[in-house]
Amino acid sequence: MALSAITNNEAMAYLATAEICDANANLLSKGELRVLQPIFQPYGQCRAFSGPIVTLKVFEDNVLVRELLETPGEGKVLVIDGGGSMRCALVGGNIGQLAQNMGWAGLLVNGCIRDVDEINACDIGVRALGSHPLKSNKKGVGEKSVPVNVGGTVIQDGEWLYADSDGILISKMELSV
Image 1 (cartoon, rainbow, N blue to C red):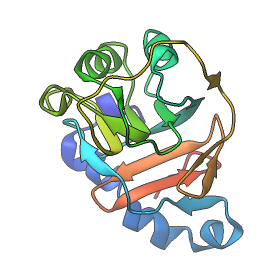
Image 2 (cartoon, rainbow, N blue to C red):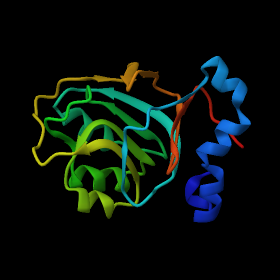
Image 3 (cartoon, rainbow, N blue to C red):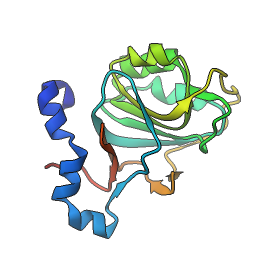
Image 4 (spheres, rainbow, N blue to C red):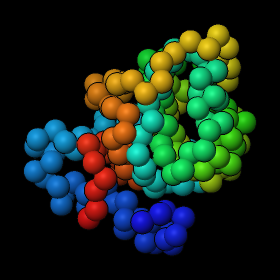
């Protein structure tokens, strides 16, 4: 079911991470469904979002972030492993707007964002460790579609992310409640 085709109330029911956990205890015990540590702050208009994951590993450099978000998102979620750096922002307002315009469902940033008011105005979901006013480097260094480690959880390209006000889940496959 495409998220754009359902109402806000249906989206919340569809994406309820607590219900997903309750209905999938076997997947949790096997490690096929993982709960991320509650270290991410919510940003953007979409408080609940989900989609297939595209991974990116960078460190204090957002050139590849922009490059990936310039491609059609088709409801995917970009998981950016910024090494947990709190020294600069990997995503700002222009990149947030680009993600929205290109059809990305959301962004998970293991690092910081900036231009918080601009990102909060975007019709996407964003989770990040926090905000920082300093922009990142522009060297173009990083790796696309590789396994990333976010808060002790290994996330693979092609897995699924489910996020809402209760938390963030990573699943080996698309789930339904």
